Length: 487
Image 1 (cartoon, rainbow, N blue to C red):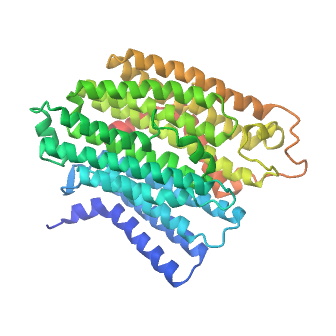
Image 2 (image 1 turned 30 degrees about the horizontal axis):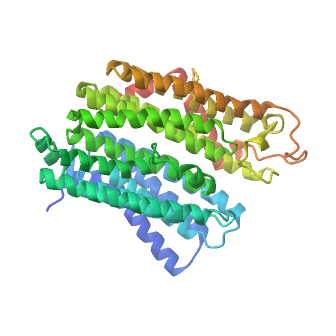
Image 3 (image 1 turned 30 degrees about the vertical axis):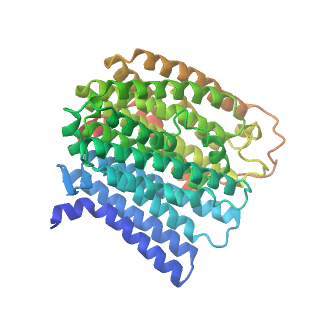
């Protein structure tokens, strides 16, 4: 098969990430030098990011590289998101590794690069084989990243738990793919789409249902969410940044493309199943987050609800195919707000490594943080307000878009669950904010002053996230026009 010059350009971000992985392997085998590995990792990802921007603006048509991979503007946009989060994780890892005292840390960056390659491959998938390969290539490095935390004795336990459950869920997906092939005779999304129109066999729905077990586990949907709080709590912050943002977004977009390109939106039973999962994920995720005293466990449970909100956009596009453009806008805006808020919070957790506290992830230890470190506290407040959907933040715009698309599709009970869930989330996010501004915290030293955020790369990341949350929250039209121009 001949690949044209335009196809090569469109495929270049994947090629650059793959080349960077090879360079890291050679460098680790030849001589370990952490700074060089960090520069190579961030440099390779930055080149891939620039190439993805170039492809986004200069390749205006759908390109099928092989039967397995389809590159379009949607896949390129989410390639940008995944690579950006991967760069942030590498930046956070450099600071975290210095404080944790890990001597041999080069493999950490290698695992992030491999997982990034899997995520990018997944959002470009056009075939059930490439969908499965992308999910596994994304998931396998996470087994090592979760356990890469020598200061936490429970990290290995969390890694084993995630590994075993992930392997079991992958077996469900393989069995589901086999049933779909048995029923339709195709593995490509377009081939399945042609058969879905004429077939009404229950095997297809059973196969898709088994695949949803795997996807539900990866995205922490209820009732596949039990691993989430323990893994979030025991995972290092840089690895958790990638796990909770990049990996979940990649899997969700892979699912979005599979449902729309294979015409599965015509199956009423599938929409009902997704609606039930959405409702219980939003309610249970928010209720369980309300009871947490650890910031990572709280973010783990809240992520269950956030990806439940995203499902409303997918269900709306499945119910009324004409709404797929508006649904994509709603999903993209919500994803962008989720990225900015969570990247900002996890970068702040990296900054808080400088604080003289024993348990830096317990919410109670942040009591009075504002009176000692006002800049960090104000930035953290912006992130929390955006996650709760307060007006004048990007999170509010994302939730409004989701409500609008839900109303257009007649998903009233899901819209109601979103509103109720947002009210519950407002309570536990405000609880954290109130704790930040209380006085007399004995956990904080009197003479220890944290490095100002603007003086470090992680601090600059936090400021940038807060800036975009506020700017796009007050003036969202530029972001809306950007996304609309991509479609």
